[in-house]
Amino acid sequence: MAESQEFHLKVPYYGPPIPPSQTPSRNCPRPPKCSFDAYSLLCTITKITTIFLITIGIIVLALWLIYQPQSIKIYAESAELSTFNISLVANKSLLAYDLAVNFTFRNPNRKYSVYYERIEAQALYAGYQIGSIGYPPLRQGRKNSMPVMARFEGRTATEAGNSYSREKAEGFFYVRVKMYVTVRLKMIVIESVKFKPDVDCDLRIPAPGNSTSLAAGFVRTECDVNNFS
Image (cartoon, rainbow, N blue to C red; front, side, top):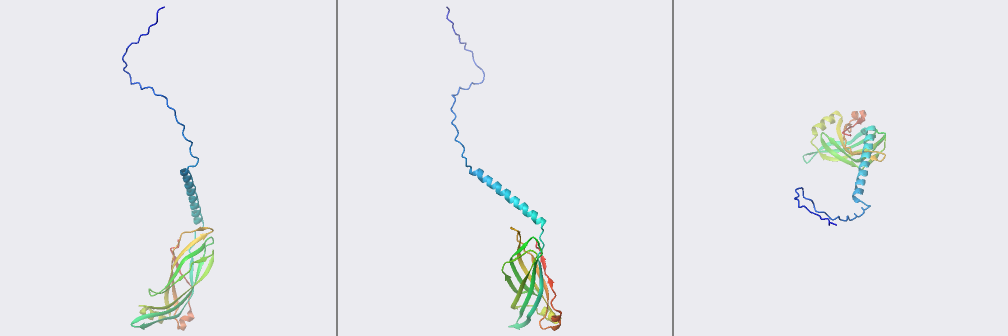
């Protein structure tokens, strides 16, 4: 029986290189993910907080548009000069004054209460400040009127001699009370931003000792309240 013979022909190979065979490697199992992911938790909290703040902002804006606040009203109900005279002391003109004014602060809003964080009143005569007083914080309810009394008393140097002589002869002195006010509005638990309205009260006050002007009396005056909103 003839033995089978195997012949290997040496034929050159011109194709792409054949990569060497690789021994299969064992893939190590990955460790299980930690159940507590601090970064994901932080992202979730941030999203919830952002959504909450946006929702609150939309609610506040909607309420603000629905219940548009009205400006506070301030009236000078009465004003009296117990003393108001100029004297010459050491070649200086000194104005002695004692002015009492009764104001009414009116909150016309049905939905908002008012918190007065700051009230400062200044009395000016002929453009010169003659006195200043401050008040503690005040709260005012809805649709409410609140009396506020102001009294200015003292002496101050002045150059208003000409205005004083003219107005004394007329029987009425013209005094401006300017108020610097900072307020917040509150509806339930929602507070507004701060408002700083300009308040000017131009008062025509009977001269002390003038029977004619005293008989005419003081006329209730509404103050100008600007830049409230």
